[in-house]
Image 1 (cartoon, one colour):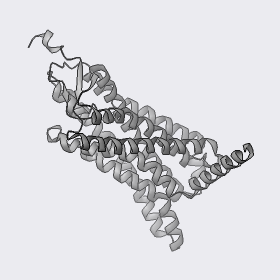
Image 2 (image 1 turned 60 degrees about the vertical axis):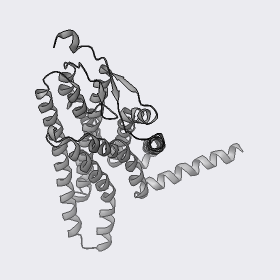
Image 3 (image 1 turned 45 degrees about the horizontal axis):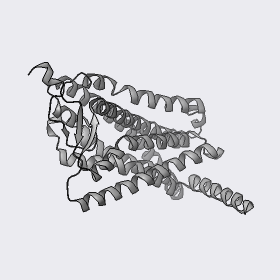
Image 4 (image 1 turned 30 degrees about the vertical axis):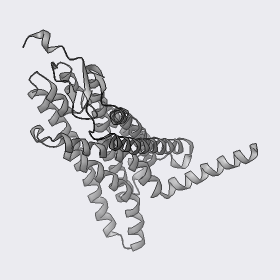
Length: 316
């Protein structure tokens, strides 16, 4: 195939979810509702952490980072997902597709690292309470937060650069609602073995290492909880970490299924369904679980609402 033919594709078409108009409109309303609730919930957490001095501790600073991350994590993919529910032809340029790929995997890698850091923070707070303020000082907390973002954005950089050198000469239809790795590789007419192997290795290393670190922290936490003499103390301590563990289980369960496997095993239909969980559902679960199960956050929220009502009544 000559070079001219290898550079003919400049745009891709997302296929999204197929089905009748009624089904696609139903999916649109469902995804839009979840997306808006996710944006509002995560924005509320960021606002409360910034405005309430009692929440400006390492645990809630990490939570604020996670909420900020989730806002952009969903915004990278969900708008195109919504567009595919309303139209049969949703296009994206090749450069735009590669950019979306980079930011999606950067946000995903950052979330993996951040969840591991949050688990380590809970490990220190529960297993080493007397040394916690020294081991997790404000400066250390900021370094961990910055390191999560820097590490997350570095992880997919080399695979993204290699993808940018691939040739795409048709077909141009992406059997997905965003530029995931396997659908992109299927459309390239270049040899993708190197970039596939590198991408698979990078994603596996980031996901599995952060997952093992997270589970190791929670393993030590469970052992510490069991050793507590008071049943009330056991219940209170476990409740503190149950919300985080819930999010971790759902998130890692889906991304390990999606990305820690040989590329040849990829099923596009199952892949799209699984992607909905970590692209749309998990970012909503974070604010719901953390706010509904956390007394400090609920107390801060009641305080903010009381202040707003007071200001409103004075204006009236």
